[in-house]
Image 1: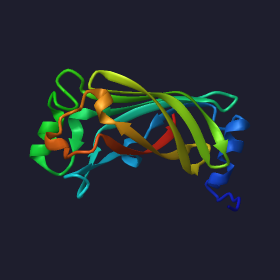
Image 2: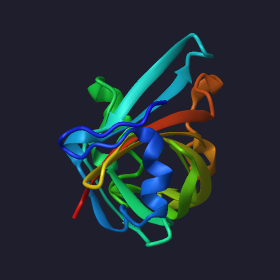
Image 3: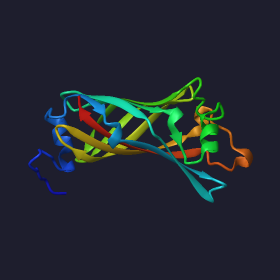
Length: 188
């Protein structure tokens, strides 16, 4: 991957690790909801189809220390779950799944992340949904990195049964879902 800078100070994603190491990215960052997305995909009808969904309301923040280590929080408003099927969305908001009356948010907390290569970030933390929490580890791909904005994309496999989301008549829904987060952070 080639290195370049344009007139706006954009740096090729290959420079992410260098920007983190030299302190350029140090400071407080906030999630840009318009440039971010949290979606999920789960096999249904014994794998014959895939249900696609997203959370339409997101918020978050991150802190990058001078040594390039990162902590962050990404909050997904579970009441905003959208699969383009109103009946299914209502069921997903019920106590069978996200239980939004008791637990309106799903929260990904990153307790530690560091560059793992020129354009990757390795992280660990926890995911809380429906009143239960589980540890997570992930690798994020850096899609953009400048001194003012960073775009990361990560994929996490989630076993929904570990969050008490076990509803599945005749076991037609897979227990594991694939979550994909594209997060655009801007300097606060």
